[in-house]
Image (cartoon, rainbow, N blue to C red; front, side, top):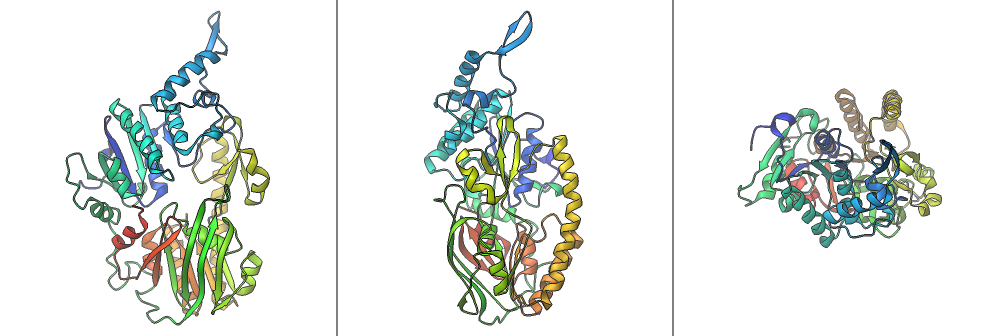
Amino acid sequence: MISPTSLSEAFSPSPGEIHVVLGVDSSGLDAVLAKLAGETPFAHVRRISSLTPTLGLADNLFLGIEPRRRFFGLPGIVDNAAMRRRATALLRRVDVYTPVPTLAAELDGASRVLVEVARALAHESTVLALFEPAAGLTDAAADRVTRVLRRLANDGITVVIASQRPSFALEIGDVVSVLSSGLSTGSIAAVLRPGDGRVDARGRLLEAMADGAPDNEGGAAGSARPAGAAQSPSAPLVEIVNWSTLDEFDRVTPVVVDASLSAAAGEIVGIAGLDGSSRNELLLSVFGRTAGTVPSGAVLLEGLVVDTSTTMAAIRTGIFAIVTVQPKYRVRIVGGISAAATPSMLPALMNTGLVSRDDEPHPATPGARALDAVRLRGRDEEWVRIHSLLELFPASEHRVLLLVEPTRELDPEQRAEVWRLVGEIAAAGKAVIMTSADLNELYAVSDRIVAMAGGRVVGQVGPRRSRVELLGLVAPL
């Protein structure tokens, strides 16, 4: 392994190779891809489709760069015939044989990814930066995508894929690097290169992903709570039993599947999982059905089933939640213009084909920058709210606290204060269940860590177990 250095020095993907960047931090991975894509339009293929669903394939490929007939040396009307010919050629290059008038909304998952790749080629991109291009696809569909990416790499296109799945990286990557601590630290290192032996390669990748993690003997480094602080927990105070819920969009796809976990009085239970694990959706669904739909399962308090079907019902039973991540949706309009949508608007919008999840960064337009400025001011207010709720909780009548990404976007001092207050809440005899994208944070705070992958609980680790073991549970095969 080379020494981790800055992205510009250590990370120089070459044409002709597929370079995979592994990491736990999805925002850091997105930042790597955005930096590589640079200013080239559509070179960064994100997790959520950016195609306009109500436009045909040719219109999507050439939106904003439509070929035009010229009159007296000046551009005139759109040359639809030329656009269709060029679109057909580009789509054939990426193995898409769907007629160009087909609406983007009618594409299957693999075709959607490949059409977005074709759009990048239409904009003359020489770099393709993709986040989990095979996620959620069948094996056959994933093979179709990877075959096209391999061929484009052989044609001289620089192909970089960000992933949280070591096994996928081993299948497709010529070079595999690991972003161990997020882009801000510049901690990126090449682990596997062409010609390297692949014996126990997945184990080596997991170790690299866990680089810098504490050994957890005697508690995590910087822990606000000694390892084993609740070594002899009493019977469970709260239990989530066989909880399942479905996707809000198709109401067929499972989001959480038969998930069960519990927490005793005075115990802090962390929930770990990578993107797509549904760690947050589990708690949001339990607390007032604020994520997913058609839930099933039961919530028990001291062995008795309680009603959590609304947020107020959950609060009346003694269960409270502090949430910094809510499901978000956007209504997409022609040309990529979009507007925010709330979960309550979904039933009316579902059949329009215009609504989509909004879980990705948006272009830095002047309007977006203005909204970011408002958001930064609001972040201070969010911190005051979180701090006040945590301070008051030990003396409240509530007995169970659900925390969904409680330290997201907080600075190190604020994070440490949250950890301290959560420890005080547990010391007061309350049960705490907490999700976090930061595995170090979970080790610092939790008595036990429950691992989730693919919407299921797949195991748990104690505070003295290594992070490599936890990553082995949560990283999908």
